[in-house]
Length: 142
Image 1 (cartoon, rainbow, N blue to C red):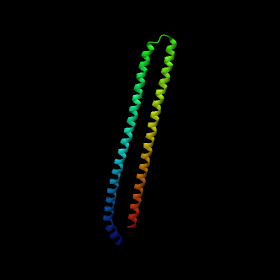
Image 2: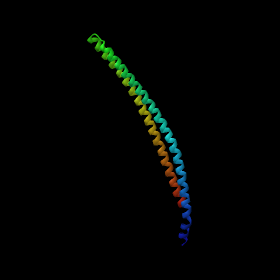
Image 3: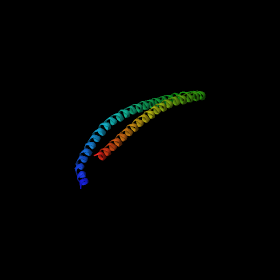
Image 4: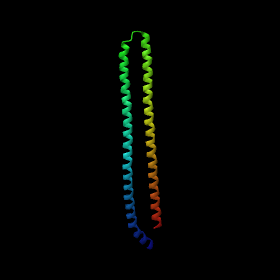
């Protein structure tokens, strides 16, 4: 009978404690998620800027290609045509190498953002597990 009486007396406290923990966890999660959203938006803004630069470079390469094609129409001999084609190929290689370098830096930044997300979620999970263990210990202690 005494054990039943103790169980009946501790139940309301458990409910209040659980509601308080839930409210604290939701507030913390919302604040952290807002911070995370802002950082993700900033990262995507940087990526958009990089893509804009890459698009401008490709547009410039296309314009150069059009000019070279116009110039090729004016060439008199086959040797001049061959030289112009070789020049065009080397310019295109340089342009594509620049684009490849930019995309590699974007990939590195994405990897950094993903690593940051992983670290933060690991910390969040560890905090939640710690809170759950503390709650169980508190329940056992009371």
